[in-house]
Structure formats: structure tokens, C-alpha cells
Length: 124
Image (cartoon, rainbow, N blue to C red; front, side):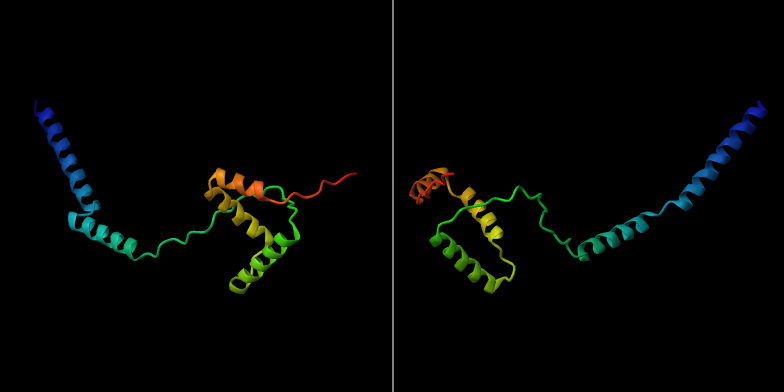
């Protein structure tokens, strides 16, 4: 039995040694708290990420036939907007028009479509 007691004692001693080594390696409670406060302070002081507008895939270019009056109104609007922002194209205005159409109800769009002047049909 004395061998058995020696084995138990040596196992306990090795477990105690491992526990002591582990305690040395692991940070104490105060060190964990300091690290947590430091990370939180850095996160609060960090500037928010810059949000870039999403890049969308372009669709097939649309060719729109406008009346002379509509074309002049579109050109006046584009020129007016170019005074404020230099990069306004006809395509940009068309994209904004699509978004505005989505905001208006379908009944209002139908009324406006009925009011549009008709162009003569091209004969070949």
C-alpha cells in the first residue's frame, strides 16, 4: 500500500504544480477588467465606418423619346442642378424619375400616362 500512497501523493503534487503554472499564465481578475475597459474605450473612440453607396449592375440603356417641350424642361432642370452639383447627367435624372414613380401610387401614374401627348407612329 505504500506504493499506492506514493503514487497518489505524486499525482496530487503534479496536479498542484499544473494548477500553479496555470494560475501564473492566466490573467487575474483585475487584469481582465483593465483589458475590457481598454477595449471598450478604444471602441467608443473609434470613428464610425464610412458607408459607401452600393454599386448596382447597370441594365440595358433605355432610349426615351421626349417631346420638344419635355426635352427643354429636362435640360433646364439638368442645368439648374449642375449649378449645385457638376455631375448631373440625363441618365441620373431618369434614375431619379424612376424612384419618384415608385413613390407615387399606380393610380396617379395612370392618370399622368393618359395625359401624355401621343407621338405619330413611324411608318417604314
